[in-house]
Image (cartoon, rainbow, N blue to C red; front, side, top):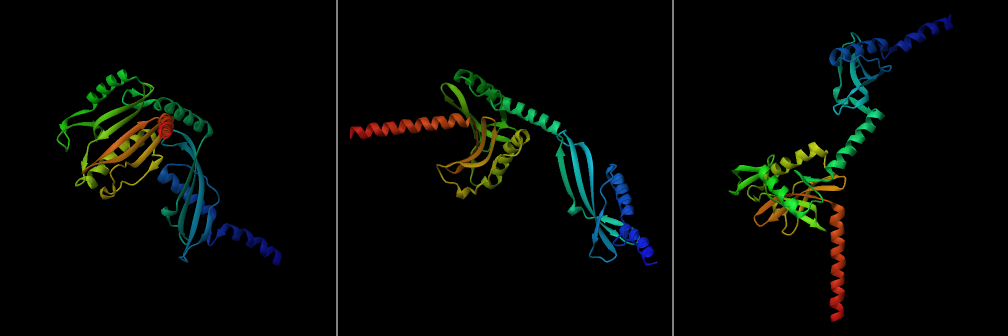
Length: 296
């Protein structure tokens, strides 16, 4: 008789976790997810645990879905959601702050995505700004610059009273090209001067105005620093705010002081060539020092 009683009670214990039937909980949650998200799921066995309220239990439910994410990639998504269930009537509420989601991109889409990114980098790394490309001759650069200035000219006037040049809401004064072996390797975009009285309001606006389009195009910057307070900016220094590396190209947003004014610079350059120029200058300087030493 004792053995027969144990056989009857054992299934009851397994079917009732802390006073609720896990199969009923699973069915309820599947219906809830279908109703609220229009997704048919059949997740793992719900994990039922104690809840501070003696009339309730805490339920963790893990399920898997497949679909397309915002990047148009095929993904496999694992969602873990938490609920508080009333033992008496199975009414429940979701503990949304505890929700967990993990997303995996399918390998074939991951490879295709990487191929797309590599293709974009192959094109964009040679582009400086507008229709101006690295390696351009001085004469060609002058023509392209003239067209770029015409295209970005604003008929309004800036805070300094001069006609504005605009890239979106970013206001700039002019662009300057740097050449090595008669080929363009850098461009500096000189933002309009911002008086220190307006710095705390206007400088963040200008940073956002040019940073957001770059984020839209290349993603988040590799380097990001807070905008320094105007009274902490020292003459002779520039202050790096954001930086992107796109293949062999680098883009930097820097703040540069100019008397009572500060300007936001956009520097687009090829770091390999910039470093080579710096090394060549260092070698030349050391040679000149050596020559001077021999003359003494």
